[in-house]
Amino acid sequence: MDSLTDFTEAQDPFALFARWFADASASEINDPEAMTLATVDETGLPDARILLCKGVDAQGVVFYGNVESAKGRELAASPMAAALFHWKSLRRQARFRGPVSPMPEAEIDAYFASRPRQSRIGAWASQQSRPLESRAALEAAVEAAAKRFGDGAIPRPPYWRGWRLAPLQIEFWHDGAFRLHDRVLFSRADVEQPWERRRLYP
Image 1 (cartoon, helix red, strand yellow):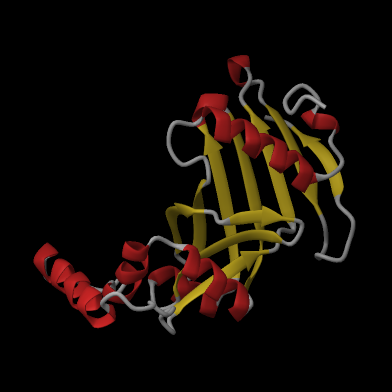
Image 2 (image 1 turned 90 degrees about the vertical axis):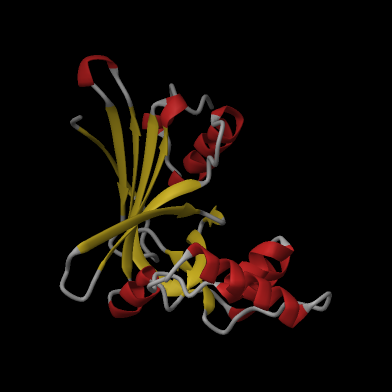
């Protein structure tokens, strides 16, 4: 099936996303896995940031980070989120909305161990989202973490976790001339229910 011309007839949103992601991986110059993650704070004020998705399968969208960061605190208080992939070169978007739950510890450990060594050191050095007095202070924290672990193993920090967004809605959008875009929305009442598919006006 062609990933564009037949996408409005697709029945499985995860299979369709896999095709679109493969297209993006072949066309995007930088970070086809980049996505905007939207959450809300304790007052209901929306918050959003771009981060890297680390996997999408039939269970949902996977991402990692510091539970003491703004997104970590917001997800702890309100475990719902939206994720948006925008592939400019393809003029396509894919949107996910749904509840978010913690990843299993073993999966988090395995992914953390796969990260470059300097990224693992950085996870220990950064107090994500909290005030930083200077760049020099950050560099000093990185140096201190590097000295702490030397050439030995770098364990996962206790505050470094992973989450999975299990979508209740997935929308695919493709740009059309004169704003006559194609939009297809898959939705379900909960993760155990089958998907319903419908087209949307642009």
